[in-house]
Length: 371
Image 1 (cartoon, rainbow, N blue to C red):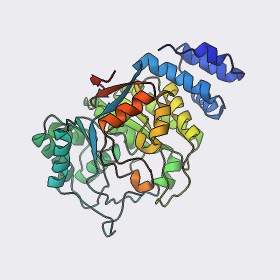
Image 2: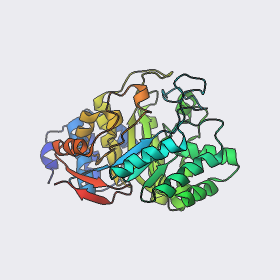
Image 3: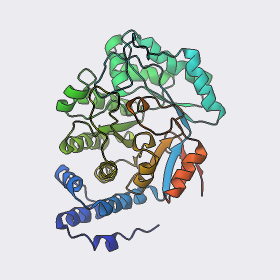
Image 4: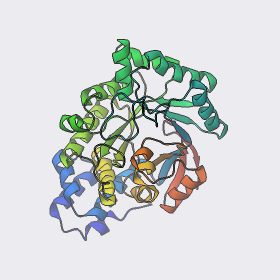
């Protein structure tokens, strides 16, 4: 479907916005100052159109989803980050840990419904040893070799390296041999050192996060990238975060998708308020424009909510994530989205957004198109 970009831009009177838009339309990379100008501009409709123009050049009318399941093996976590309402101490009445059989049972349920990917991320208990992480991957792949395993964030990989005395390369190589197929993007939060000292002072820092992904890409393990926004960061720090990801993607080409994650404050020590839907849409659109070397931008329906995610599919995003089934981390912080969706629900959401639903696998290979 052809977008009438010039027609809409005729109504724009902001000369600087038009200059940046012309640069984008001529496939020239924008800089950080220009991204900040777009954030501060009131030309929301034109911004969305510009991002959607880029998206359609990359992905056509497809909007992707996957039949997957998220498994959070435990909510016990040694880091106790102030922005997180999920992680608790072992003594907390809400603390839980899943046995291997419980984990395998959930993977079996996914397998029986024709699922393709299990996404594993959780708390980081101080008493788990290195072999625990590897064995979870190994046992799932042994029992269900067809299931793609996307597991353990860069923060968890960094922790595994620390407790085992191994290098990132050794840890990732052993996980890959055990059956790991891809890395999720969680744990990035905001790369700014100032922000990390406030919201997550003890976790892997920006350089460590990026190095884990660099090594994963070197080993042929693709990964996702995220940004948690809407808490104490500045717009400048958001753009710098995207710049650091863009540089690494220039170097390795190993990132599959960028996922802006809206912060939910309920139940966190950090507190605050939920950011606006306008901010959500601007962040989706600007990430699509700025991250010109990423093929995909995800409108994660769990944090955005289904309605804003639908709009985001016309603001540069091309992916809703998936069925998920049992997301716990964002729900602990107050999101009112469902815990999971059926395929029919996701197909309907995408169609009502005016897009063509395309079921994919982890690596964005199209499995089925719902015309």
